[in-house]
Image 1: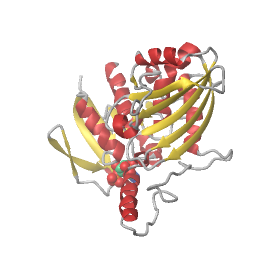
Image 2: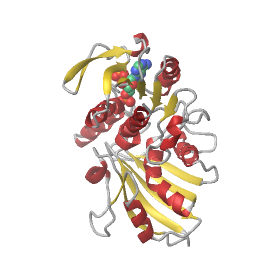
Image 3: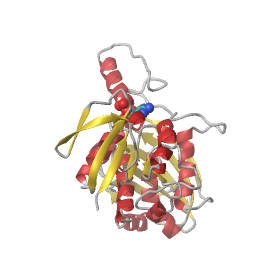
Image 4: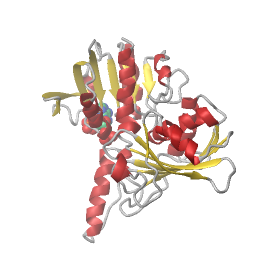
Length: 336
Ligand code: A2P
């Protein structure tokens, strides 16, 4: 069977990667509708050798769409997601609009794929990029050894902020290298040659929303509200690929050797862990443009008897967003 697929936000950083991944993986498409704002309606995007016109979402009739991949921001998802679902589409939503609703499953394809079927509203939420890559690596360890607590500091690339954020890093870098003044717009302060410990809005508890996503989403996806998560989320001047310094505390002790062996057999994970120069993953050398979640720097926490440290790197636009969304669409398609 072939499916009528719509991509909402098709002109964006995640949307364009959704299209290339749908093509790469030969998703069974009958028709493809490309939707964006009126700003880009009328433009053309090439897909598998065919030019497809971008349509204005506000004027699009969703009837007949089987699967809709949304990545156009939370307010667009809130307004149009339920309309597409009411018209019969399965909505796979990359925004945070529905992630914390009890009747919307939040699914990492390697971790809790069975939850895809549990969608009373016809909406499936795609997790936040930082949670996504962290759990591809940590879920196997949690199942075997029981994770009690996670300390995580993220090093997040600008592509997570969309096309305008990519452009701002490029522009500022050029301006600063030619001794020109800069004018931060997309980020609150200079991002080139700097880093910013602030992603998404501040919450009453002093954490940012990006940090709290790591707490809420980890518990929901692993189905375990007892897991403690202590996050710091930082934007860094990297174009593609998020990195995370993660320290876990487990119920049962896990040695670096046992963790390496388990992770080498885990779906979606690649261990890159030689204790020598370059023997670890980085966004540029490993993650950017690839599908895996890379894990390195696996070592015992010298300050805790049941602590383990890991360095987790992945392409935030691919596994962190577009790839997982397409993998969820594949799970839906496999239902027949
Ligand atoms: P457009 O290109 O017409 O602005 P990014 O995350 O890279 O900034 O991309 C955001 C995506 O969401 C783009 O495809 C953008 O389309 C789309 N988008 C933003 N606002 C709307 C809207 N109100 N209606 C439809 N699509 C939207």
